[in-house]
Image (cartoon, rainbow over all chains, first blue to last red; front, side, top):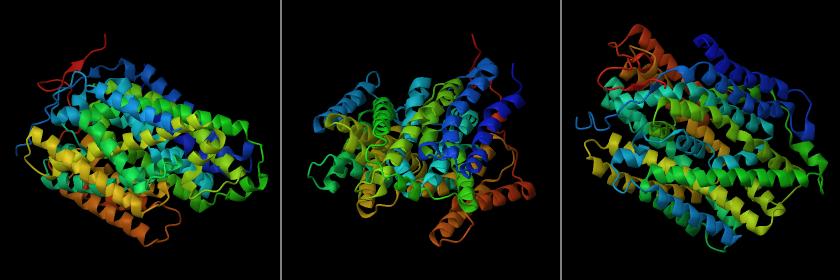
Length: 80
Length: 474
């Protein structure tokens, strides 16, 4: 099972680094296929990458946790 | 075109009626948050349905068309990272909602901190910043309905759209919203993929190559700072949007929330195609009343009439679904949080009245304003994100003081709005981000020097005992 620290790195740090500061930096390059800047094209590639990172967290860690089905009392405290 | 458009609208009403099946008598919590019974699939459609409003479909290509890819970077960056942040935060917000029996975000604050004043401030700020969002949907609906060319006054058409949104809500509240969202999402993805692909097919036909070159403003340090601070502000703020919280509360379990969050980024596949649409318009100069007209104008130029009808119906439904979500968030903010002591039935009745008034107010606002849709998006997050320090207090911290959170929210809102309205130079820093820094400074200074009594944060809440039920995996 994935460690909690690895879960944060894979699920949070990697997707964040794929956007900040990578995208603004790439946007300064003058490469632009179809006129679309490289930074934006990279951002499109970061979309499936983010889902992949979250899927790894799910399979490696969160799927194995007990689920929470908590009964709620929506009216408690409303009379006060 | 008209037949295709009206057919889809009729189908949406049938779906809304279908959603009522098995829930003819609804309590307030069922009307607002489906009594927390939605599985991962329904929660997914409801949540992404709210994400991709008419502001995304019209505002995103409009923003790229008017301002180049700077707007695209922060807009896509924040939505993508919002799903990532949501994977970690939303299950905890869901747990907090269940433990405190919350239907709204202010419910959470009131019950966790036992403070009526904090409930009022969070509810008041939510109302204040949700008002322009409804206006944004009606501005977008005006643009879409104008494309139908029915020769009817835009005011009458937007009023009819408002009536339609109210009918969805009146039928079965959040359940109707979720079912219509499924139709809207399927239709919208198809419409955008189709328009984008056809634009690509006609990419070089009659293109003016220099147009694309001219419109591409080079990024500067200031635009980079704006993009980065806006992404940070809005990706977290997204989890604190009143209707996002309400949608999280509809989920059946924490795992249902997580599973839906994994696939949410994939729904962003529409944006490369919307970018193609904006670039197509830049390469093929066309007469536009405003930059927000880019998407319907390109669809009109490239697609046969019945297809245009479907595209316009998808776009119109996206505005209507988001309107129902906003209404269902605003109704209980008034009937549960601002007005105390209403019974379960009275909450539902009062909410319907508030929603009707809100729709009328938004229609009037839209009739007098035509701001760039992405600007409204920025303004919305200035205020909504200011409840972040308080939410961190609910989820992770033990001794946060309600009075400090109130002071922080008010100071953050005032600073953000003042900086924005008076155009104070911030070297690109998002005004809402500056407000959040001031707000956090107040709350965390108070936490350090004047800690309150200890409360168990939600992340450390024992998941056993009389209230919670924890189901072990099979």
